[in-house]
Length: 246
Image (cartoon, rainbow, N blue to C red; front, side):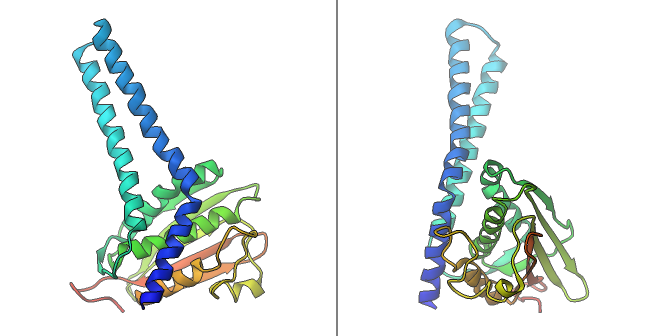
C-alpha cells in the first residue's frame, strides 16, 4: 500500500511537470492584471484624475486577481501534497469542474474546445478528492495529447446517474486519434502507452484504474482509430452518512 501511494504521488508530480507551461501562463495573467490596475490607481491618485470610486474599483480588481492567483497556488499545493486516503462526502460534479478549470489554460493553448455537460441532480459520492482529481487530470491531459494532430479538437465532459442502481457516471470524450482494439485491451496495463516517445510513463491509466477500484467503481474505455476515444468513470453514489452506495 505504501509503494502504491508513492507511485501515485510520483505520477502526479510527473503530470504536473507537463502542465508547468500552462500554469506559468495562468499565473502570469493575474500578475499582469495586478500590475496594470495598480499603475492605473497610482496614476489617478498622483495626477488627481478619476473619482474615488474609480480608484476603489481598481483596488477591488487587484484583490480579485490576488484571490485568483492564490487559488491556482493552493490547487498546486493540494495536488503535490502526499496524503493518506481520506474519504469524505463529495460533490462529484465539483471535483470534475475543478479539474477542468485547472487544465483549461492548457486546453486553450492547445486549441482544444471544451464542453461541460454536468447533470444538475447528480448525487454525492464518497471518496478522496485529491486522488479522484488525479484520475480526471490524467484523463483530461491524455485527451488533450491525443488531439494534438487532430484538425477538430473538441473535448466533452458529461456526468449522469442511474437512479435505479445509484451509480454516477462521468464521461471524457475527445476527437483525437483513438486507439485500436488491440491497444484497447492494454490501455490499463502498467507501462503501456500510445503516446509519442517521451511524453508518458505508461502508468497514469493503471494508477487511475486502481484509484477508481479503491472507490468501489470502474473505469471504462471505448474508441477506434481516427475517431476519438471515450473514458468513463463509474462510482456508487452516496447513501446514508458514512455509507458508500453499492
